[in-house]
Length: 386
Image 1 (cartoon, helix red, strand yellow):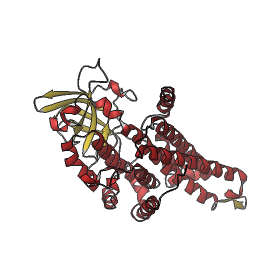
Image 2 (tube, one colour):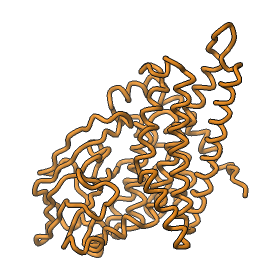
Image 3 (cartoon, helix red, strand yellow):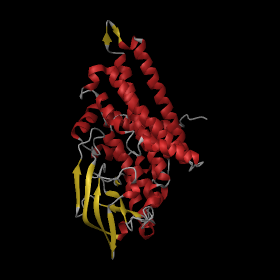
Image 4 (cartoon, one colour):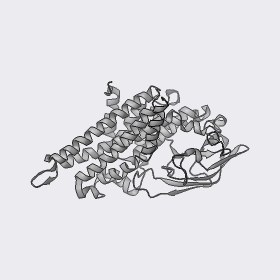
């Protein structure tokens, strides 16, 4: 199979690299990380390139669904800073893809043009203090009262809640005994009365800060039930739709971006740093490390764009996307740590970018479904012939 890029995707990648060098210099990326700051002005300039619409149909103002190009954007932004790439995912993927697949027609008409313009982001309000991978056990409750929905509960690790327009919130909307059928998704504005957001001081992925969110008798109109009236009690189907495959690829694209940056920096350092009167890149042990990392990264990218192509063609790809997420995430972690080793003591210094790559890479095997979950699903779905 040929996974070479088309002239269009090569042009997109080149455009993004020019954007990153101009608008996302290394010093700025380091500052966003240390300040845990979201650079809204950079995000707005990114939106002006038209890349927010890569998940939005043309009829709603987008460029049409292009999963491969979306992964290129995520990868290239992640090479420099997750403070921009994660908000991009929150817009193009969390908002755009979910609206296209499960939003009501009214929600699509109102919100998808905003996605394409870069003025709408969703944060995922899925996990809870006692609920991680087992999302069907969520305890946050929603009750319909006339033309309102009242929400009470708490969410944890809700990344980007402080910068989003809506929290895409999974709620228990009926008897918890029927756990897969009585789930719904509602859209809650972060500044709605009764919403409290508390930052969590996490190790990495700065910029789209992760938070705790509590809902104390939060009232929203029934129009903010995701999918409209037909979406009530359909939350589980929304979680396991085709968007789940793309979500795994989003994380894999972040992984390849971070790993690429780490390897590039280690390669440069190995050809600048001298010890015992010669460049450390002349030692075979260092060369072997660089060769192994380049091979790992190449394999991860091939898996990413193979699976992205399948998703783009609407092919069944649950196993392929899980394998991709598993391999790319673990490769990024291994590459970042090995690059830190090559940098020696400098790899442990906050002023050196590799220290940030390590902190970000350690999260990647956890986010978007842990490596253990991916392994379980690869086996289970392969056995089922999926």
